[in-house]
Length: 427
Image 1 (tube, rainbow, N blue to C red):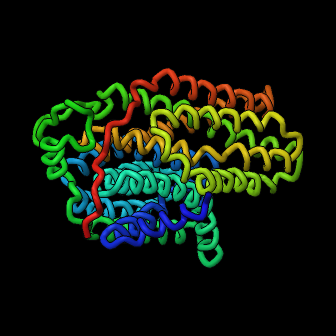
Image 2: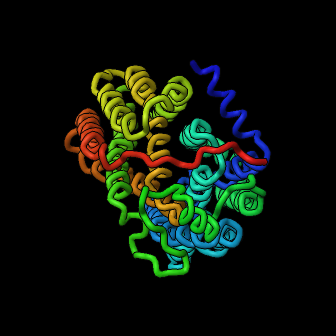
């Protein structure tokens, strides 16, 4: 079953004028998955307390949450070149200032963290919106979003390992700066790589959508990009609002498990084994995408999405059966199999629901919903851990996952996907 999927990935990711954008986007996204950890390590290395390190990292995340929808909106209006070039320069500069020109305890370091979060290059939103706009066959688009979900799992596991390797030959601050510069270079590559003929971006995308109905809700008129935009942007669409709500709820168990896993391991084994257990969680999700991904495209996205969330809830419930560190590792490896598939189906739904003139912003809101749900889960997990213990947190995580599945089944009619363009990729 898996033999055909790697070939589909290879065919897509080596295609002329598609390969450049796809691989530059991988480089540009390296900072996304390790920067909060790198900031904490850097502030601690500078002599700051854990409280100061946590504050700086939290303010970086706050800046990202505040700035990313606005930058994505500008990306939709003007296309890749100007927006990605500006953020590719501003982001490494802001982080270099944080590392080399500020110190813990002052106002400048938190301010630099907020600025760095605001100007984080919108590589995720850019590439995912490009997959929606590239002239691809429908099966190829499904493969692209499955690749995006699998890539997320790989980067979640691999990016911190890359940071650790860099720290072996230098300081945390030097490693942070190096990753920021590499990410900036990747963003510049993504900004200026050529795309296939027939790809629409920015104002051109809006014109195409107005005449062809591509990437939007059937029968919806698309206003010119020069007009005033509503504050909520694509969230005015009920289907997208429902989808982001579902994704926020579905991310709560991730945050809960993030707190419960190390606590469980500390009680049932060596605390140092938490990293291995976490790795089983990510590896299970990646293998699930490879093993089950090929068959998913045979089911309509709005049908398979709630089913996958139900499978995700059942998988989360497997943690309740664990009685040892090994048992938890196995439960997470098996139970995480649907996670990347849930993410891939969500991206497919966003590409079909979103108005073509706000595609990048729509993907940004979906990502932010996941970040906020994760953060809420971590906060709730922290409050529950001491009085009730990890097993109770596992139960709450299972309940939250079941609630997400119930919401998805209830909103299935809203999530009916409109057709994206299905043409041969021009080169």
